[in-house]
Image (cartoon, each protein chain N blue to C red):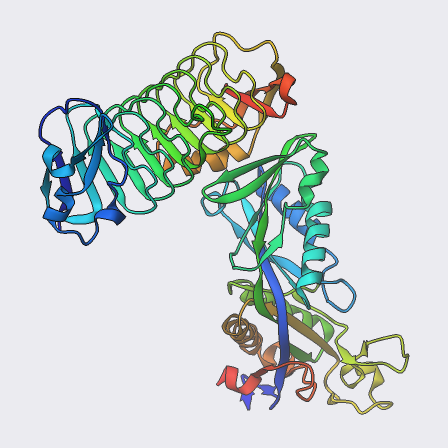
Length: 298
Length: 268
């Protein structure tokens, strides 16, 4: 299959089940809400070493937030409920509680809950105040700029992580430029994030390593500098490969995000230096969600 | 389908206990069966039909029409449905209310919302003393739900209140929110003397500065409290304009004899 001069590999992106939550961070203005979100969701690119994958889902207007202030919605994904709860507490405690004027609220609901302000309240050293408003419990924690307001808990969602595709281009700058367009297209899809820096990852990995301590190592088949010494997947004209990784709250969200990203790349096409589109496929061993590139683009 | 309507024929010769006259209890009953239901008047049983005309209709939207305030315990223990009282209510209105909506299109007597745990009590007129307060001998008063009063309330509103929200558009009498255990009492029109005496936790929010405060409250200055934005949004759907328009309020902490974890917030 060829789209606008771009060869679409007959392969699939292999994704897997994750636990996720959505939170809403508000502040006096959008700048400070984003400062908090960037701190909380920073260093959350991959569960391999960050504990969770997280990012800003979208910006929220004042009429979309619980307290009527500007804010952002963020998504966090982890491999287990326990790890998600741990990462959520640490990241809100260090990234949002610390940030001037912010408040944090649940962005989703479910029967099973994750603590949000439930444990952070103890920072109040006994001066924290509980308020139940419209059936939801909030904690008012005294801090030096007034009070940090945190909803007691947020919902726990079953989600899909690790959706991906690989962009093979004639040069690094062409690959990057195409990926930037894809990330912008994916950002318009609700319920998904692209957790890597700027939404793009250059260090795609394979499972395992020659070093026993490492669970993953460089995807040598797609490294242009290793052509000639490994079983390369790259044709001679490919100079650079970049990957976009997507986490989504549902299979449908993931499918929509993959489609938006792939179509954005195809629109740039061969004229923009794009040679091929492929995906991280681990032979079905990694996850139960498979997103076939050709089906998505059909 | 119209609402099931009970219309009081004439002023009864005493106080009538309306316990048990609830949407759930009347659902599925014939007019005759409803008329035969026993009520208590002056400690003696009396058939409902002797006092009320019964017009059949949807029991889930019960309407009680009265010209006198002799009907006590209206909506006591209600869990679902709606009761609308067209006229004044007696004492103990909405006692132990757990769910549903009780609307009084008139004034309410003393001890309204005592023991209330959920639902909404909306009083279009004034409420008497001890709104949402603990009954004599009870350890705590109102324990949940929302009370909205469009008029004034009497003395000791919210005394020993445990949880929930009381919104008052008018003025409160003396000693409101005394011994408040937790929860929130909002009084837009100001209040009488000594509000919050013995307040342990919880919030008394005033639209106007009180003439006097107990000496056991300390001024904590003017602060910006984001939770008031949430409260204002929630209250706007029940009794708009009652919560101060600005979240920047003057805060008094106390009662210091009871731990100092309570607060009185005054609009700036």
